[in-house]
Length: 269
Image 1 (spheres, rainbow, N blue to C red):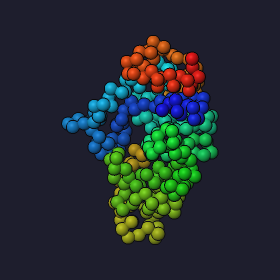
Image 2 (spheres, rainbow, N blue to C red):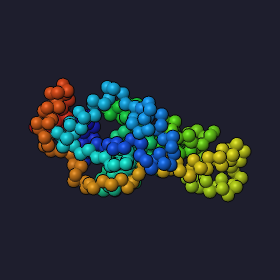
Image 3 (cartoon, rainbow, N blue to C red):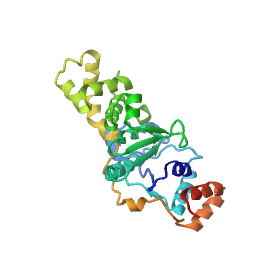
Image 4 (cartoon, rainbow, N blue to C red):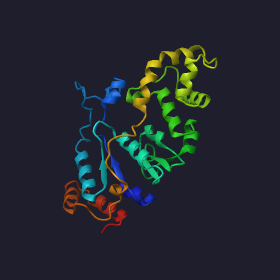
């Protein structure tokens, strides 16, 4: 995957962002149902992980370490928050492509700052959708990444345990954001008795007030994860950091051809 991305996009910097906490306390405190359906049976904190996935994680760690590709996580934060923090810190300094299969990260898209998402859920890294503001407008009828986050808050997300507002799906949420500017404008209109909001829609929005009070904390990626890192720390490697470790993992997992392909893509002998 990395070799494909490097060959297609020739990045100057590269970082793998990591979940140090898949269910952070600040999100659970806001909405206790956050990701509860992913808990292992009888656990209050362990994620239900497929048996064939767990052994892959240390292999990934070793490959990244052996190559010298930066891997970043932050205690108490998800990988999305690490990405959000890096985007906030380096936007405008570097063009940024976020590679993900998670639509939640569409919120960081910003044409003016050169921030795009390469969305891999449908075509993989080889045929990823390039998500910019035109894509968001065409696909979701929202003009910006921030508007996408507001729309997602209203819509909710059952895969993350977010109920959303009853009766408000994706299209309705986008229409409300378009009409009232953003989530704050919509809520001000509800609280102010705006006559454009009436009937069941008003009742549903009023009933969801407590959810809407806290949901943005859950939906919006953090921009302040503690990451003591500078752009130079994320530079694409020009030499193998740990040849012995890389050789060992390539042999141990039968991954020599994949490792060689990546070294070739990186231009490393």
